Image (tube, rainbow, N blue to C red):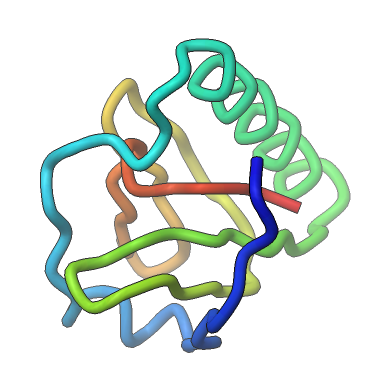
Length: 95
């Protein structure tokens, strides 16, 4: 994966006002599988150790990042505190 430039940091409360296109930002199947594994690890860190993670994602305006705790994962979405949702296919990385 290439380095990520021009990333805007936002607060999780702002996510509900963003617009997300439908296509996946990761084209390689391996990258998509790795994303799921990283999300599962981040979910465990959040639930067991109350540890925050940095999620880098893309909305219709560009690349953004948020530091937060992951509360849940479905097959299509990542759920954050206060029922804030990021579509799974829009996430580039989790750290």
